[in-house]
Amino acid sequence: MTPRQADSSLATPATGVPPGSPAETPSAVRLRLAPVRDHPGLVDGAWWPRSTDAAAELPGLIAAVDRHLGEMTLRVGLQVDAWDDIPHRIPAPGRAVRVGWFRSMDRRLVTLSIRGKEGITLRVIPPDATEAQAEAAFAASVRPA
Image (cartoon, rainbow, N blue to C red; front, side):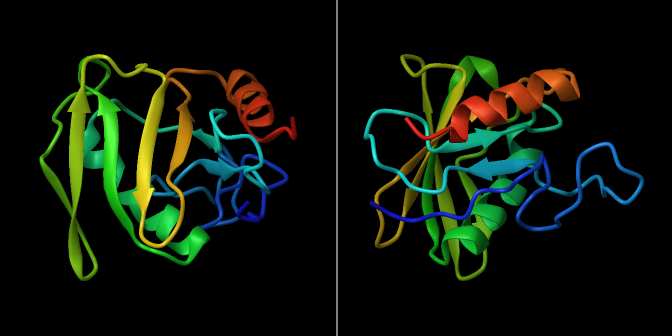
C-alpha cells in the first residue's frame, strides 16, 4: 500500500489552482490521486485532460505524477482509438517515457508504470466534461472503498 495525498478540490498537485479559476494556467494538470491504494484492480485516481491529443497532454501528466509520487514514470499505456497524435515516447527529465497503445484497453483508463513502485491506473475524464461531471468523477475515483 502506498500512501498518497489526495487533493480536496479539482486543484492539481502541481498548481493548487481549481480549474476554471482566473489563475488557472492552460498547462495546469487536472489530476487527483487516491490517498491510499488498498484495493488492487480499482483506479488510483482521475485525470481530466483538456484534449485527446496525447502528444500535448501526456508530458504534463507524466511531470505531475512524477512530482506527486517522488518517482519517475517509465511507461504509459492508453487505448489507441481514444487518443489523437500518440507518440512512441515522451521526453522527460533524464529519460524518454515509452507510450504503449492498446486496442483491448478500456478507453476511459490510462496506466502508468512507476520506477520502484506499483503502477497506477487513472480514470480519464472526457475533455468536454463539465466541471460538475469532472468533480463527480474525481470524487468517485479517490473515494476509499
